[in-house]
Image (cartoon, rainbow, N blue to C red):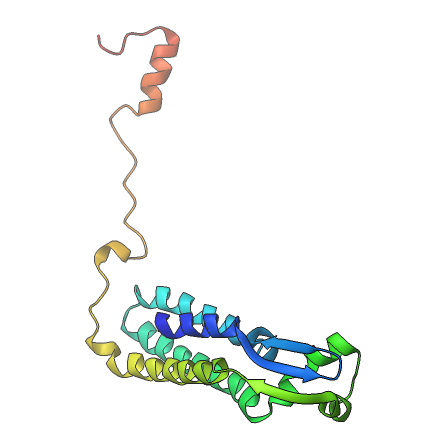
Length: 179
């Protein structure tokens, strides 16, 4: 799970597309082409931390959540592969001021895709499959130890014995606690 999340984070920060316009060449990274990708990857990292201490029922829930995060990552990356011109449109509009889907598509002379959208898609699919595997194997995982229990019982207040504060008060009055 952490490996998939790491690959998604790295891929999301690298150049996915190179767009050639009449006046310039733009590089579009994964953050611009698939904005939610980093958030989904960070959610998987947090989920991995929670999974380490989770009891059985919570493991099943977290496995289902991981499957959902992976599926959302797939849905986030797929449009970049199926309609790259549509995914680079906001970057082209910001750089040139050309707005409107048809106008942006006409202004793009060439669009070259790098390997990172495909790498992100593979990592997203694997992330969803890891969630399925977590859900399927949750019963066989070791149970967290007793030290991770919600809280320890509270100690009963001291009765019949002097408290530490009483000894300090005796010193303040000038009494010798060793006598």
